View (spheres, helix red, strand yellow):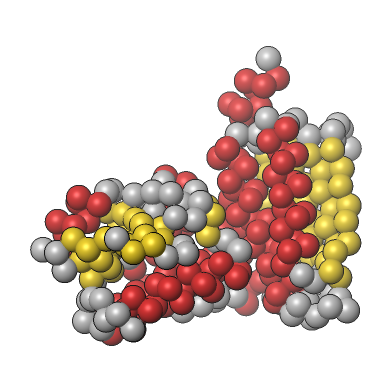
Length: 118
Length: 153
């Protein structure tokens, strides 16, 4: 497993599981860094399928949502799939209000999300 | 615009600051306000809503309103009581028309930037009101009823 600044990754078959480690995804500098690190998984390391696990995340702002949308486009352009899991109810509410729960494939936990890649 | 003063409200904490247009200064104000809400025993859920809305308002003021211009200031006024929260955030920018912000929940626009911050502010607060110029926002939140009753006992 490789440790990065804002997440840890683990490979499960052809899926890269990305476990976000920041409790709050809010600070502009951190969001920019997180975006760069996530994008490099797709653009430099050419990873196709990504699963983002939000279990550690207790707060995120609309800027962070923007990065996730960009990531989704990059993953799709690379021929892969992006799924999200372990999102706390209050954070899920943010996705629901902005209707981004329709854009992203959100699963309850890693097991369910990994199965959905098959 | 509304001053949200509720003449009968007994505010137990009042706060007024003018800060430079720097994200770090906004963060310090946000942390102080959230600390006060916790000290007033507001629930995590209510604090989450205020956090989200105030974060968006401060980013709007510093980054979009004042465009991080060091010569411009952001004025923040806040009041907290046992059951109500009031905050006003004013910047020195050109302002904007909140009614002209595109609907970010439109199926065709889901992937486009813009509009989510204001939508989240409106969703998590009890009221959100912009002045005519669009460079000042007043937001209020009524504490969730069950929480207010339980700490009043």
